[in-house]
Length: 196
Image (tube, rainbow, N blue to C red; front, side, top):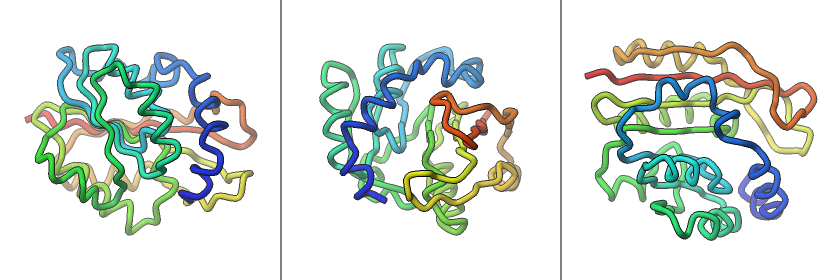
C-alpha cells in the first residue's frame, strides 16, 4: 500500500489539492470547536486538510506513513503551524511520545486500508487521544479501487457500535458522491464527540 502512495506521490498530491476542503468537509463543519486548539490529521497525505485547519488557527500534528507523499505535504505546509510525523495506525507509536490530547482528530480516507481487527485497534488508539469536549471525524470511502489497491469495506455501524460502548456521541452522514467523480465511489462521514 505504501509503495503505491510513494510511487504516485506527485500525481496524488496534485489530485488531492484540487479539492476544496470547505466543500469536501461541509457536512461536519458545524461540529468544529469554536476555539481552535490542537488538531491531529491522521493520514495527512498532501497536507491539504492540515493546511486548511492551520489557516483556521489550529495547531496541527500531521501523521503520514508514505515518506514521498509526506515530503510534498511538508513543503506545502512549511510556513504554517503543522508538524509532521512518520507514523501509522493502528498503534501510532511515535505519536504516543508527544503525550498530547487533541480537540479535533481527522481521519479522512484511511479506514479502507485497515482490516476489521486493525480498525477496532485504531479506534481504541484514537479515542484515547481525544481531549474533553473534542470531536473525531472519520470519512469512509465505499466502493472498489480501480488502481489495484486492496480496500476493505467499512460499515459506518461498526464505528457507531464502538462509540456507543465508550459512551461517546455519534452521528453518521448520508452517503455522498465522490468529489473526484470516480465511478462507484461514495463517501460517508462519522462524527464522534467527547462531551465531558
